[in-house]
Structures are given as C-alpha cells and as structure tokens.
Image (tube, rainbow over all chains, first blue to last red; front, top):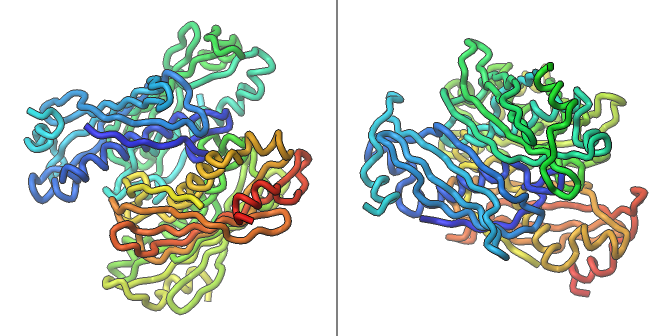
Length: 132
Length: 132
Length: 132
Length: 132
C-alpha cells in the first residue's frame, strides 16, 4: 500500500553497533501515517467525517537479520487483517542492496467513537486497505 | 525481578495527547538493561565470561488503557519463557495512582556466540531469571 | 529548582558506545515538564489562567565528558535568564559517582497568546523561577 | 553539502500538536552522518586512516516557525566554522511548500586521537567541508 525508505543512522543504532530494537516502530508509524495522510484518512479528517478515531491496541516486531549502521532499508506496508472494529497493518523491513527481509512489524488499531467505545472500521478505511 | 518508574512527558506523547505507541519499548529496555547491569549480566560481562551475547528476536506490546501526559507509571519485569537458546521477558506497565494495568510488553532475546550461532541460555542468566 | 535522575541505557547511546548527542534534550524536557506539573504551571493550567502558552525558541547543549552506558546521571534545572516574553532554563547534567559535570543544556521558551503573539512572562512563572 | 527530506509524523510531534523541540536534532545527525558515509568519511574509515574520531562538543537549535504534523521539510547542511581541532556544521530546516525557514541547527564536533586528546581536523574532512 505504501513504502518509506531510510538509511540507518546513529539515531537508530545502539552500543551493540546494530539497530536499536525499538527504532523500527517509529518507521512503521511513519509509513502508516504518511499513507493515511496521502489517502485523506488522517485522524483530522476521520473524526469530522465518521466520528471515529484510532488508538493502538497492539504492536509487534520480529527481527530476522540485524540492521547495521548505514544500511539502506525499505519499510513496506500491506493490509494485515481487518476485524469488526480494528485493523492490522503488516510491514516488511527490507534491505535494499539484496532484498533480504530484515524484520517484520505489525500495528493493530482499534476505531473508537468520541465516548471511547469501539465502532466498526469506517468503510473508506476498509476500501483503502483492501481495495474491495 | 526489577521495576523502573517514570512520569509520561512530552517526549513520550504524541499529538493525540496520549502516549506514543512506541514509547513504552524504550522503558521495557531500560528496565531489562538496568536489571542486567545490577545482576552483573550486562553484555560487557556476558561476552568474556560465557562467550555469549544477545540480539532481539521479537518484541511486542498490548495497550489496554491510553497513558496520558504526566501519568506516573511503573514498568515491572518478570520472567516470561525460557527456551533453549532464547529468553522472553514480560513487562507490566502499571499506573501508580490506581494500579491499573496500562499495557503489557515483551522482549525475546536469543543468545549467540561470536560467529552468530545460537547457543544455550547461559546458566547464570537462567538462574537469575527463574531463581532455580 | 528541580532534578531528575536516570541511568544511561541502550536507548540513550549510539554505536560509538557513548551517549547519543540528542539524548540529553529529552531529559532536559522531562525535568522542566515535571517541574511545571509539580508547580501547577503546566500548559493545561497556564492557558485557562493566563491565556498564555509556550513554544520553544532555542535550545542547546555543551558536552564536557562523554556519558557512558549505565552511567547514573542527574539533570539539575535552574533559572537561566528571564526576559520580557521569554524564559531560559539552564540544566547541569552531573555524573552521580563523582559529581563531574558531564554536560550543560538550556531551553528558551517564549510565551504566546492564542493568536500567537508574544506576551509577558506570567507573574506566577516568574515567581516560581526566581523566587522573587 | 547535503540535504535530507522528511515528513513530520507522530514520532516527531508532541501533545501541543507541533514538532517536539528535540526531534530536529535526530534529523541534523541523519543529514551529517549520511554525508560522511557518502564521502567515505565515516568514523569507521576515519579511524584507521587518520587515527581520529569525533565526539560532539556542542549542539543547538533555534526555532522560527513551529513545524506541524505532516509538514514536509528539508534539512540542508552547510559548513559552519572550521577551527583547529573542531568543525561546526550548520543546518537549515526548510518547509517545502513555501521555502520558509522553520529552524536552524548546528553541531560542533571535536576530533580526538585514541587517547582522547584533540587533534587537527583531518585534511580530507577540511577539504570535503570547504571545497578548498
């Protein structure tokens, strides 16, 4: 659905000389947020149009190969699973030079109304995620 | 096994006015790392003594209640699961004022030798984690 | 005026094995924000009471001694300079074990009204910062 | 000398709805580090070739206009000042849509030998920075 590329820098790495385990989460969010912005599905739009906003319900990351300082990576987002009131985005972190899968991430968001109760995933979001 | 307390600050929160979903991961790592340091099990010790070091294999977090700016929280670590070559630490993020469980996190580390092959969890680490 | 202590963790350090140069800024902000919260001077209070809020105008940090993984540090805040519409907080980062001055930081905030024009530093803030 | 572009995301912004004051520092470092990597002047190269490495001596940022969620920005690096044993990089943070100068940053690095004593700025670095 969307992809963001970046080069690992000192900001992302830790004294072990490899990527800090939490650094990818920020790139997952950047990829998702930029996609919502491009699709006109940012929270600023979603709230007036559908009365819905989102909070994180779950996130996770599995690390296959340690990212190393100055590696150039892609964060590629696809639709994971769409439930009744939540959607999961899945992300592959891929190393550019050899297309190795470095890590896999996921974020699950739940849709809430203004009183904080879960509501169905807005139709526009469902279509944007699945193309159906 | 160990606990660290902190107050949510602007550094941890995002424009939604609640905790940024990735912010807890840094607190999980702080709690674990400080524990290894206190137990003499830091990577700087582990490598010369057992020829083993660790990389992250998996991490995750489930969010129950949104943390709000200035909430005072505890990050409490306990042993999750110990496998042959990996160990999982489990973390509860607890709000001080009412002991509500705000979030649950986990980090799985795999132990490697200098050539990058998985090795058994060092005995001292196993004892420190399980008390057995 | 206020102090926060912390131990440098993987989250704060970079592949050079020492503190990441930007890591202290988050601790400066934590120290200042916690102080505003304790004094009842948080933006949530300031805005309804005085119609003023703050944005950062300038920040800086001078590094004297590299912080090392697991160093225990204090971030100590004092009043820097109070101008007509801005105030500067000064911070000393001090290593606990020998009281060495590791770094010095500063943050300058400007006070704005709802239309974004600079306004005089609220009297309560001035008193809290200077004791006068 | 080099420029990096990025879009402000939740990771960069705080509950005030604007950029977190410390967020730019990570972009300054990304711009500088990527430049050193492109020029073959990364610390990994510098140390074996010239026996020199760098630590941060000072950093700072002046904020002119608050960055807002989803703003697309450029971080443009130029040579600030070159001293005997240190060099300062200057950075302009520019908003793409109207080329407004959002913020100005700077990082001063000092060059050290293996015993931690300041050494002259390596000739290759001086040439790369000044073109002379």
